[in-house]
Image 1 (cartoon, rainbow, N blue to C red):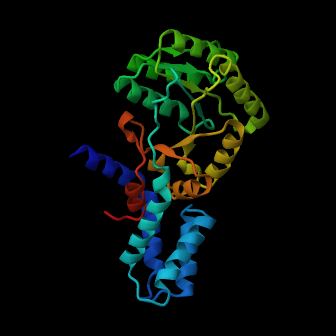
Image 2 (image 1 turned 30 degrees about the vertical axis):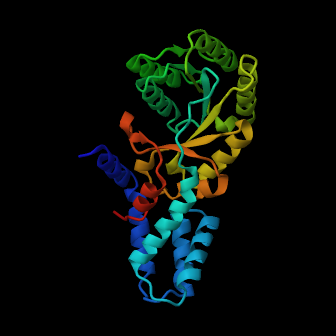
Length: 308
């Protein structure tokens, strides 16, 4: 089985709950041959229930009505139409993270709520870049969660990547500053900083992240060069609120969407791209290192609509 096929099958498996829900819904909606208003209304409702978002669902159904209203239409034609339109929405935002910054190291701040898969994602990214020949350092700045530090240390030991850690509840900004000093001294290409994700204490978290940015900018005024938000797809529309909050807090530059293997809410990826216009650098459909992959618009759209 080729790499492409194995990843394709993993993505299909990961999105199966979403695609099955959409497929069954479309079969129920498109029982009449001609496209009429009732069918369009049912389609719009189905897309909203699939977490594609109110605005995006309205735009997709409107586009379909302009092309096919009162004309004969088959289920396969609807699926192809939606896949094509969703691909158009996603394509501008399917972008790998570029590490060709003239600055060394390229400082990446990784944010996200606790439980989103943030620390695991950092480990996977670090290993991938390390294996590609980049010199990587990790900074475990989620100092309030011993488990997060330990998890990152496991990835660090496994891949042979140096890590900066501090005592429990240590000042995360001070630790990030020391990690950046260390990364500069050893000529690292990339410094990845893990951060706390206690969104329930929003004002404290905002202050902490702003302080961290301010402190590392004393060493490098252009840092951080990337701010990645890790989103758990199983939260569905709640992911919108997370993007909004972190975007306002720290100026998110890109997204990584995890846990697409355990959700019927994969459509949220479409509405997030449509609303926030942020690149998705990778999607995760499982726990293994190979299950975090670059985001491909057409593969995602066609898998979402059960088109082989």
